[in-house]
Each structure stands twice: as C-alpha cells, then as structure tokens.
Image (cartoon, rainbow, N blue to C red):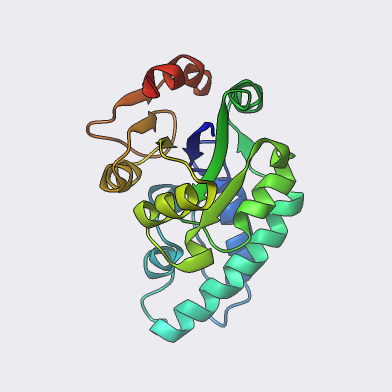
Length: 211
C-alpha cells in the first residue's frame, strides 16, 4: 500500500475566489434586498465550513433561517457556475501531481459543500490523479475526522496533509500527522513540519515526510 498525500483544494490546488464571488452575487441580486459580496471578503473564509460564509457574508437583517436558505441557493448555483467558469490552478499543480502519483496515493479533503470536489475534478480534468475524496458537505465532520475517514477507507497507515491555513495545520496535528503548508495560499501557519514556496517543492518534500 502506498503512502497517502491528502490535499486541501482552495488556496492549495486552485483559486476560485473570483468565480465564487461572481456566482454568489448572481444569487444575491435576486434577494428582495439585493447586496454585493466582495471577493476580498471571501478570501479569509476559504477553508472554513460553509455555514461560516453565511454568517459573515449575508446581511445582519436576515434571519438565521433566511441565511441558511440563501446559503443553500448559493452553493447549488456555485457548483453549476464553476462547471463553466472553473477556478485557476496554481503553477505546476498538474505536472507535480502526475509525478507524485507514481509513488503516492493522492486524496482530496476540503471543508467545501457537497459535490464541489466533483466539480473541481471535472473542471480541471484532474480526476484521474486522485484515489478518493471526502468533504465537510458529505458528512459534516471536521477535517481531523475526515483525515481518518480517508485513511480507514483506503487502508493507509501514514499520510501528510497539504493545506494553506492554520486551521488545516491544527486539524492535521489533531489527527496525528505532519502538515505541509502551502504558503502561496490564503492563510498562515504557526509550526508546519514542511513549507511549500511553490507547489512543485512537494517533489522534494514528500520523500522526506515519509522517511
């Protein structure tokens, strides 16, 4: 059995903030009191459970129920929008993953909504590179729990998680595994075991992580 490298998506493999803002604003424009969501407001929320997006981005005048309903509408439309307006892959992602696939099993784990990972794979054409995936929207579990879900499902004993936020770091360490920080993403990290300045740095880091 190969060792597993588990990847976050937003801020690690691609940047979809522009497209997410565009799609959510289309939905927001139809609200009885239209409002605008700015791209810069989405960036600090990337990687967090989707319910936090609703609490931060939607007007205070909306009730909790209204926010949840609009969130559902936004997420459904976002998935459809991204199929024809995909995010932008970071430099060397595809080429690096194709090399890593020869020695490691590649997995995906994100705090995104249900079907977002499938849309990511369809929009980028990278589906052939990954063995398995799970997200918050599938089971409402935190990342440290879903790391274990992936490992148990695939029979893996060892993994590293590649992400771009302190929350990713904390969740990885809570699961008991090394964290690889994608410093080009949206967030920060305090004490990552490894740091990527560029995505292709993973080619040198991966062998060290599994010694």
